[in-house]
Length: 228
Ligand SMILES: [Zn+2]
Image (cartoon, rainbow, N blue to C red; front, top):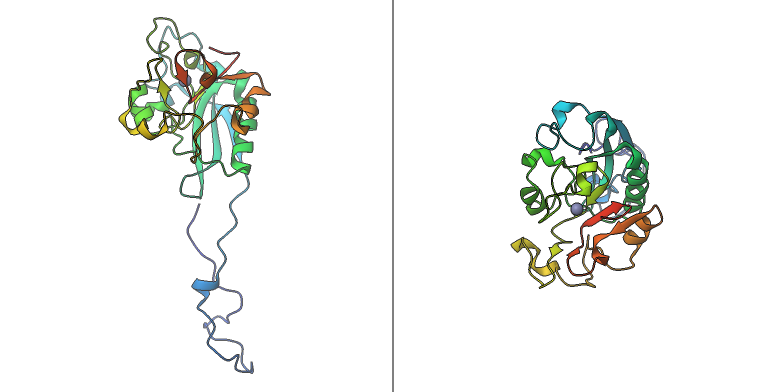
Protein backbone atom coordinates (compact mmCIF):
# COMPACT_ATOMS: atom_id res chain seq x y z
CA UNK A 1 0.00 0.00 0.00
CA UNK A 2 1.21 3.44 -0.85
CA UNK A 3 0.88 5.87 2.01
CA UNK A 4 0.36 8.80 -0.39
CA UNK A 5 -2.75 10.81 0.24
CA UNK A 6 -4.56 12.67 -2.50
CA UNK A 7 -5.21 16.33 -1.78
CA UNK A 8 -8.70 17.21 -0.74
CA UNK A 9 -10.94 17.96 -3.75
CA UNK A 10 -12.82 20.61 -1.74
CA UNK A 11 -9.86 22.98 -1.89
CA UNK A 12 -8.71 25.09 -4.79
CA UNK A 13 -5.17 24.47 -6.06
CA UNK A 14 -3.68 27.10 -3.78
CA UNK A 15 -5.35 25.53 -0.79
CA UNK A 16 -7.94 28.26 -0.11
CA UNK A 17 -11.68 27.77 0.08
CA UNK A 18 -13.79 28.86 -2.88
CA UNK A 19 -14.37 32.62 -3.02
CA UNK A 20 -17.73 33.99 -1.99
CA UNK A 21 -18.51 31.25 0.47
CA UNK A 22 -20.22 32.62 3.58
CA UNK A 23 -18.30 32.22 6.74
CA UNK A 24 -19.12 28.78 8.04
CA UNK A 25 -18.62 29.77 11.65
CA UNK A 26 -15.98 27.86 13.53
CA UNK A 27 -13.01 26.95 11.39
CA UNK A 28 -13.38 23.51 9.94
CA UNK A 29 -10.84 20.89 10.93
CA UNK A 30 -7.87 20.52 8.65
CA UNK A 31 -8.21 18.05 5.77
CA UNK A 32 -5.75 15.75 7.50
CA UNK A 33 -8.20 15.34 10.37
CA UNK A 34 -11.32 14.88 8.28
CA UNK A 35 -9.91 12.70 5.52
CA UNK A 36 -11.41 9.22 5.70
CA UNK A 37 -8.79 6.50 5.39
CA UNK A 38 -8.56 4.91 1.96
CA UNK A 39 -10.68 1.77 1.74
CA UNK A 40 -8.60 -1.40 1.93
CA UNK A 41 -7.83 -2.88 -1.48
CA UNK A 42 -9.92 -5.82 -2.64
CA UNK A 43 -8.40 -9.26 -2.20
CA UNK A 44 -6.04 -10.15 -5.03
CA UNK A 45 -4.03 -13.30 -5.66
CA UNK A 46 -1.63 -14.37 -8.36
CA UNK A 47 -0.57 -17.99 -8.84
CA UNK A 48 2.60 -18.49 -10.84
CA UNK A 49 5.34 -21.01 -11.42
CA UNK A 50 8.20 -20.66 -9.01
CA UNK A 51 11.83 -20.65 -10.03
CA UNK A 52 14.40 -22.83 -8.34
CA UNK A 53 16.33 -19.78 -7.16
CA UNK A 54 13.38 -18.61 -5.04
CA UNK A 55 13.72 -21.85 -3.05
CA UNK A 56 17.44 -22.03 -2.21
CA UNK A 57 16.85 -23.72 1.15
CA UNK A 58 13.35 -25.16 1.07
CA UNK A 59 13.90 -27.36 -2.01
CA UNK A 60 16.77 -29.70 -2.84
CA UNK A 61 17.42 -32.79 -4.91
CA UNK A 62 15.63 -35.79 -3.45
CA UNK A 63 12.57 -33.81 -2.38
CA UNK A 64 9.33 -35.70 -3.07
CA UNK A 65 7.91 -32.97 -5.35
CA UNK A 66 9.72 -31.39 -8.32
CA UNK A 67 9.93 -27.58 -8.47
CA UNK A 68 7.78 -27.60 -11.61
CA UNK A 69 4.83 -28.89 -9.55
CA UNK A 70 5.07 -26.06 -7.02
CA UNK A 71 3.35 -22.71 -7.32
CA UNK A 72 4.10 -19.30 -5.85
CA UNK A 73 1.00 -17.55 -4.53
CA UNK A 74 1.30 -13.79 -4.13
CA UNK A 75 -1.77 -12.48 -2.34
CA UNK A 76 -3.36 -9.92 -0.07
CA UNK A 77 -3.67 -10.62 3.62
CA UNK A 78 -4.97 -8.64 6.57
CA UNK A 79 -2.32 -7.78 9.15
CA UNK A 80 -2.34 -7.50 12.92
CA UNK A 81 -1.84 -3.77 12.26
CA UNK A 82 -5.32 -3.60 10.65
CA UNK A 83 -3.87 -2.95 7.22
CA UNK A 84 -3.67 -4.88 3.98
CA UNK A 85 -0.34 -6.51 3.09
CA UNK A 86 0.95 -8.68 0.27
CA UNK A 87 2.42 -12.04 1.20
CA UNK A 88 3.96 -15.03 -0.54
CA UNK A 89 3.33 -18.75 -0.09
CA UNK A 90 4.63 -21.77 -2.00
CA UNK A 91 2.29 -24.77 -2.33
CA UNK A 92 1.71 -27.77 -4.60
CA UNK A 93 -0.12 -26.80 -7.77
CA UNK A 94 -2.96 -29.18 -6.85
CA UNK A 95 -3.87 -27.12 -3.77
CA UNK A 96 -3.15 -23.57 -4.96
CA UNK A 97 -6.83 -22.87 -5.68
CA UNK A 98 -7.83 -24.19 -2.23
CA UNK A 99 -5.38 -21.87 -0.51
CA UNK A 100 -6.44 -18.82 -2.51
CA UNK A 101 -10.08 -19.59 -1.78
CA UNK A 102 -9.52 -19.88 1.99
CA UNK A 103 -7.30 -16.80 2.21
CA UNK A 104 -9.82 -14.78 0.26
CA UNK A 105 -12.34 -15.60 2.99
CA UNK A 106 -9.87 -14.81 5.78
CA UNK A 107 -9.23 -11.43 4.20
CA UNK A 108 -12.95 -10.76 3.87
CA UNK A 109 -13.33 -11.48 7.58
CA UNK A 110 -10.32 -9.25 8.34
CA UNK A 111 -8.93 -12.29 10.12
CA UNK A 112 -5.33 -11.26 10.80
CA UNK A 113 -2.12 -12.94 9.67
CA UNK A 114 1.09 -11.82 11.33
CA UNK A 115 3.57 -12.44 8.52
CA UNK A 116 3.66 -14.34 5.21
CA UNK A 117 7.07 -14.81 3.59
CA UNK A 118 8.83 -17.85 2.17
CA UNK A 119 10.62 -20.04 4.70
CA UNK A 120 13.75 -19.44 2.62
CA UNK A 121 13.91 -16.01 4.28
CA UNK A 122 14.83 -18.06 7.37
CA UNK A 123 17.19 -20.30 5.37
CA UNK A 124 14.56 -23.03 5.45
CA UNK A 125 14.79 -23.21 9.25
CA UNK A 126 11.34 -24.16 10.52
CA UNK A 127 12.15 -23.14 14.10
CA UNK A 128 13.21 -19.64 13.09
CA UNK A 129 10.22 -19.19 10.78
CA UNK A 130 7.84 -20.22 13.58
CA UNK A 131 9.64 -17.98 16.07
CA UNK A 132 9.01 -15.07 13.69
CA UNK A 133 5.29 -15.99 13.60
CA UNK A 134 5.54 -16.61 9.88
CA UNK A 135 2.72 -18.27 7.97
CA UNK A 136 4.25 -20.68 5.44
CA UNK A 137 3.51 -23.85 3.50
CA UNK A 138 6.09 -25.68 1.36
CA UNK A 139 9.27 -26.80 3.06
CA UNK A 140 11.09 -29.98 2.12
CA UNK A 141 11.70 -31.35 5.61
CA UNK A 142 10.83 -34.39 7.72
CA UNK A 143 7.77 -34.30 9.95
CA UNK A 144 8.45 -33.07 13.50
CA UNK A 145 10.23 -35.82 15.50
CA UNK A 146 10.05 -38.18 12.51
CA UNK A 147 12.22 -39.42 9.64
CA UNK A 148 9.41 -39.47 7.06
CA UNK A 149 8.52 -36.45 4.95
CA UNK A 150 6.20 -33.85 6.39
CA UNK A 151 3.14 -32.93 4.31
CA UNK A 152 4.93 -29.59 4.00
CA UNK A 153 7.52 -31.37 1.83
CA UNK A 154 4.73 -32.03 -0.68
CA UNK A 155 3.44 -28.46 -0.52
CA UNK A 156 0.15 -29.79 0.83
CA UNK A 157 0.29 -28.40 4.37
CA UNK A 158 0.29 -24.89 5.77
CA UNK A 159 1.14 -23.42 9.17
CA UNK A 160 -0.85 -20.30 10.08
CA UNK A 161 0.20 -17.77 12.73
CA UNK A 162 2.45 -20.33 14.45
CA UNK A 163 3.01 -18.16 17.51
CA UNK A 164 -0.71 -17.78 18.20
CA UNK A 165 -1.27 -21.42 17.18
CA UNK A 166 1.59 -23.44 18.65
CA UNK A 167 2.58 -27.07 18.37
CA UNK A 168 1.83 -28.49 21.82
CA UNK A 169 3.16 -31.85 22.98
CA UNK A 170 0.90 -34.37 24.71
CA UNK A 171 2.41 -33.41 28.09
CA UNK A 172 1.54 -29.75 27.47
CA UNK A 173 5.06 -28.59 26.67
CA UNK A 174 5.88 -26.43 23.67
CA UNK A 175 9.06 -25.36 21.92
CA UNK A 176 8.61 -21.60 21.47
CA UNK A 177 8.68 -19.36 24.55
CA UNK A 178 6.77 -16.60 22.74
CA UNK A 179 3.76 -18.96 22.41
CA UNK A 180 3.21 -19.19 26.17
CA UNK A 181 -0.05 -17.20 26.14
CA UNK A 182 -1.49 -19.25 23.30
CA UNK A 183 -1.27 -22.92 24.28
CA UNK A 184 -4.81 -23.25 25.69
CA UNK A 185 -7.98 -23.83 23.67
CA UNK A 186 -10.50 -22.38 23.29
CA UNK A 187 -8.82 -18.98 23.37
CA UNK A 188 -10.30 -15.70 22.23
CA UNK A 189 -7.49 -13.64 20.69
CA UNK A 190 -6.68 -12.27 17.22
CA UNK A 191 -5.27 -14.80 14.77
CA UNK A 192 -6.03 -17.77 17.04
CA UNK A 193 -7.60 -20.89 15.51
CA UNK A 194 -10.19 -22.62 17.71
CA UNK A 195 -11.99 -25.98 17.43
CA UNK A 196 -14.96 -25.70 15.07
CA UNK A 197 -14.38 -22.05 14.20
CA UNK A 198 -14.84 -20.48 10.78
CA UNK A 199 -11.18 -20.91 9.84
CA UNK A 200 -11.26 -24.65 10.55
CA UNK A 201 -14.56 -24.93 8.65
CA UNK A 202 -13.21 -22.98 5.66
CA UNK A 203 -10.42 -25.55 5.30
CA UNK A 204 -12.58 -28.58 6.09
CA UNK A 205 -15.05 -27.89 3.30
CA UNK A 206 -12.14 -28.27 0.86
CA UNK A 207 -10.90 -31.53 2.39
CA UNK A 208 -8.19 -30.12 4.66
CA UNK A 209 -7.67 -31.40 8.21
CA UNK A 210 -6.63 -29.36 11.21
CA UNK A 211 -3.76 -30.44 13.47
CA UNK A 212 -5.70 -29.11 16.46
CA UNK A 213 -7.88 -32.21 16.22
CA UNK A 214 -4.99 -34.65 16.51
CA UNK A 215 -4.97 -36.79 19.63
CA UNK A 216 -1.93 -36.43 21.85
CA UNK A 217 0.13 -33.79 20.07
CA UNK A 218 -1.85 -30.71 19.02
CA UNK A 219 -0.55 -28.76 16.04
CA UNK A 220 -2.85 -25.75 16.15
CA UNK A 221 -1.11 -23.91 13.30
CA UNK A 222 -1.27 -26.85 10.86
CA UNK A 223 -3.73 -27.69 8.09
CA UNK A 224 -3.07 -30.36 5.49
CA UNK A 225 -4.94 -31.62 2.47
CA UNK A 226 -6.09 -35.13 3.24
CA UNK A 227 -4.57 -35.08 6.75
CA UNK A 228 -1.10 -35.83 8.09
ZN1 LIG B 1 2.64 -27.80 9.75
